[in-house]
Length: 547
Image 1: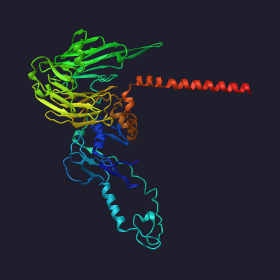
Image 2: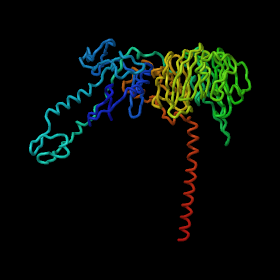
Image 3: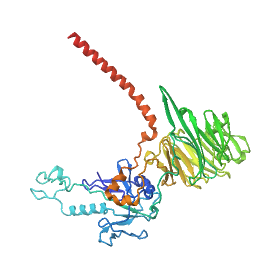
Image 4: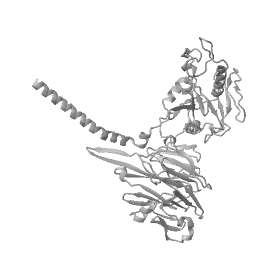
């Protein structure tokens, strides 16, 4: 095991001398959640994140000397690599600015690293220079030996030198060292770091989301519900939740309805048309007021509304447009409101209304293109070019202020307002992007929703801005209780409450579904084992009878 006691792009092993490369992208994934959760941790709480074979434990700590635990006071505005001395005992602590070669989203370059090990590359170079000053000599003829002679033997007398093995004490790796990140952005946040509202982000399957014209968004999901079993008949009773949130996550309105039947047969759908929100279900659709959530009536779903839900029709820019044989056809309104490049586009696959009344057009002709027309008629075109040319699983979202987000092959690209090129934001399961993730563009970043009550918001550069934190947290303890507990006991108690990140299979498959799938997969094996057992007993009985 190799401890990483220094923030660097290469870590040197003191046992074998091999250097391991740690790219800036890996540091970004390792530090994304600590930078978000660090200010929200309780005193003594320890959490852990993992990325492939790397593991990082983090907690919130006061700046104190390692030797005497006296307070330390580094200046965030200081520059240079001068060590920090303890005013009480005089112990030296390594201190430097955050390396500019490893930029981390959400962390300013003025942050200070405290308590690291010395630079391993310089120590290795110094050790190599000392060894090179006195080359080894042959023990029989005293001739100088090169690196090849250690294997092939001496060129003068042919003797193979005896290479002394390193002792176990010299080959012992260094112990892990706790290093600190000091920044004004990591100031502790008072209060219990719970979700915005208890049970707000609670659903079984990935929800349906739709952006609102004022920057908020509407969400439609099925909550956990209840499971009732009568003999062999299993009935699910779910709770359908529809709510609208402001950009600051304040609940504008919330509606809960009891929905019987399996979750897969609900055929949930959601769309926003300015001042109206349409909820689709298997029995029809319901229209809600976007401001208050009041029901405006339930109606039978027409084929035109189903076409609009699947991106074949849209009402935007004062027009009613439709996808007709790979081209945009204007059913109602003046076609002059659309740019000519959009009207002449071939291979159109989907058209959608954007917040504020704009239009988004997804087409595939000489590459996959996304055309974004804002309410004023200005056009922005983005070339996506998927590797296989397929549009399966491709989703896009545009915020009210013009931030564009694209999700494809479990990768997220983002373009800020005014930019004409998509930039990578999140990549694969390492950044917690799953197959069932639902994308929503917000003015300050992107949202990702998935099964199992997952809800997170990221900045355009990939920094974590919000996490629903559905996992249990340790309870806050009073000052008197903390004073009676020793420090090691507090750390051990908090360590038992680490946030255990689910694996990809556990995350993408609900618990009830996993149990049902496991039972269905095991019954053929059980039947085969029963048959083999019966056959063996029958053969044994026949053998004994014949004997």
